[in-house]
Length: 284
Image (cartoon, rainbow, N blue to C red; front, top):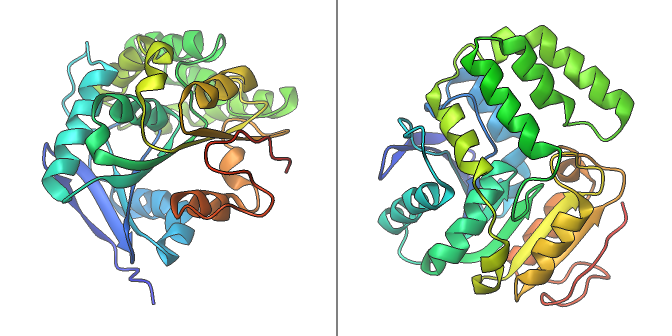
């Protein structure tokens, strides 16, 4: 029976973690967040809930970036923080599941510190942001510096949908909840946006030795199907699952998503899937 007790604290380097479940470790690198403080209360429950299905087979370690980042932070620096924390906590390489901005960090981690990554799954992430995603993130940072949280949230939320109508709805939602959403934001958010703006790992993807699964939606406005495909193709042991009709948040909500991820991490080909080194386009 899985252990659903939630244990929280900080890893070496002051990186907040939340641990639950039973089984081999699965380290989760989350997407961008308003701050890098240890999550509490409803926030902790909200981030744990979508990861609970993995806790049936794995001990999940949700690990955020450390607080107090320099405003000129780089992806290489963020990856180094993770590498040092993982070496301090685990005896060897671990499986990594990373979402969005966490996926950018995870690719850098796998390239720079191959000794800490066993198998890697990145969801809604690629070797760089897309033509829409990059300027929007910079605009979010500009609006936050100008203390305009409604505009910042409208811009950030507006690219999350898969269709024009859903993007308009989410942009309007961002406008409404922007002040509350960014109420606890710190300079760590701006530092992370800066790091991702300078991130493009295309020329180094061939150095990644860990088997890697790239999962994305073909309507992800922060990236593009081409970026997902290129990322998987340039990693020697890369594989791609591209879900039609899904946006930036939708890929992880497709039925069978958890089974696909666990099957890959356990080196069990899912039904109809090719070997690990192959490329596949899966239809939802």
